Each structure stands twice: as C-alpha cells, then as structure tokens.
Image 1 (cartoon, rainbow, N blue to C red):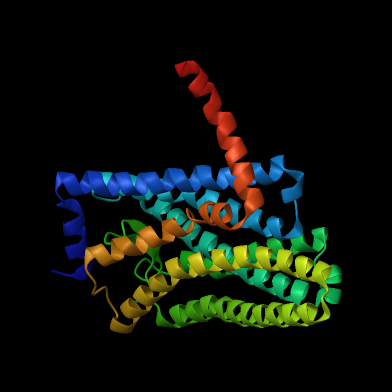
Image 2 (cartoon, rainbow, N blue to C red):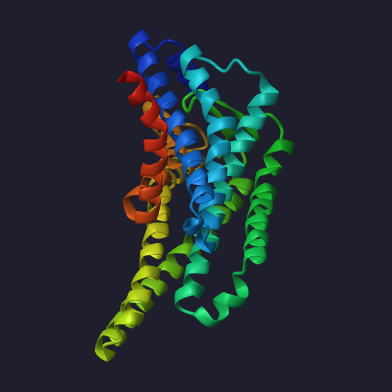
Length: 316
C-alpha cells in the first residue's frame, strides 16, 4: 500500500474514542487561538498605553493568527471528525494557500520585529527615523506582500506537485517531496528570516547587558530603568519568537525528511503532531503576552472580569 493510501486508511479507520479525542483537542486549540488573539487586539484598542510601535507588530501577528484560526483550523477539525477531506479540491487549495501565507507572514513579521528591536537598542538614533508609524505600516504591508509572492507558485503547479490533501496531517498543504527545486527555494525563504532574527537578538541582548554594566558603573539609575523597560519589551517579543520557533522548527524538520526520502515515511501520529504544532503556534502568543508583559496581563484580567461579572451576578 502506498504511503498516502496507508495514511488515508489510518485516518478513516480510527476508533471512536480517537476520533472524538483528536477532534476535541483541535477544536479547543482553534477556539483558544481565535478568542485569545481577539482579546489581544481588543486589549490594545482599549488601553492607549498599549498602543505602542512594538505592539503594532503584535497586532499584525494576532491578525495572521486570527485568519489561520478562521480560514484553516476549523476545516482540519471537520476532517478529523469525518475521517476524510469533504470540501473539494478548490477549497483544499485555498486551505493550503492560507496555511502557507499566514505562516510566512508571521515569520517575516517576527523578522521585522527583531530588526526594529535591534535598531531601538543598538542604533537608537536611526530607529526614530526608520520606525515611524507610517513606515511601520508599510513594513507590515511589505511582509504580507513577500509572503504572498512565496505562497502563490504552488497554485500553478500540476496536481501531483502543488497543494493537495495530506491525510496524515488532516489538512491540505504543499507536498515538499514533490518539487525539490521549489522546496529548496522555500527552505531558503524560511531560513533567511530565522538567521536574521537570531543575529539581531544575539547582538541586542549583548548590547543590553553591556549598557547595564556601563550605567551601573556610572550610577546612572534613570538610564538603567529606561534600559530595563526596553529589555522587558524585547524579552516579551523574544519569548514570542522562541514559542514560534519551537512550533515551526519541528515542522520544517518533518518537511525536509519527506523531501529527502521523496515520499512520506513517518507515522500518522507524527504528521498529526505536525499539524497540531502549526495551529498551536497561533494559540500561544496571548498566553506569552500575559505571562511576560504586566500591562497585557492587567488588561486581559480587566476585560475577562468585565465579561465574567454579569454571569456571576446572574448566578446570585
């Protein structure tokens, strides 16, 4: 039996307990991703202190995660429940295109975040010029345009080498093993932002540490406090990047493994983990903001308390 047929059979013949367990877990992640990122957007809208330049990028990330949780994730839930893809070939391409573009937009946005943090801390005199509100909006638009350019080509590939339903993953996606030249381009396309991000964060954390030592020696406590505040913002955004990397690097490893063997050789559980990591990446950011950023945490608490209070009063 061919790998795809074997994975299709495994998806269709799961026990009822497995069907309900997988469907429930993915549905729960989908709900958390949608409402968590919506909460982040509302928190920034509600609290003017959160309307900062770095948080423009936070909103850009939240929007891409909301789009993933509305345009893609629900249909994996349907697939896991039904045991097969039931939405047709055209919608399958739309689904796969969505996963590709939303993932690339998130990664490229994090690349811009890393660059902005680098200039804010290491070359602050240039930051004021390069990162104004209008320019930041232009950067975000450019990021989406670049993500679009990288996501469109598989739409024009033939059926065997473009977007297709992959039963092991319970989703439609690009088949990395089917078109090695484009796969090589894609890995470079993905790897470049990761390299830029890594270099920027290493340099800026070194700069923060070096500045704190200098200011401590000079007893310049006001400058230390300002430096600490910038470090807190940087730590929050770095935590988002770490979370994203923990989700997407295993995904890249699985794709490279398939491409190297020219076919899918891994068990269905591994491929389903692949899908869960993609959707988990759109779920975790609001929790990271809540844990690492006091202003976000307070705003989340205030909003949720306002929502919950009428229910509590109703119970009384």
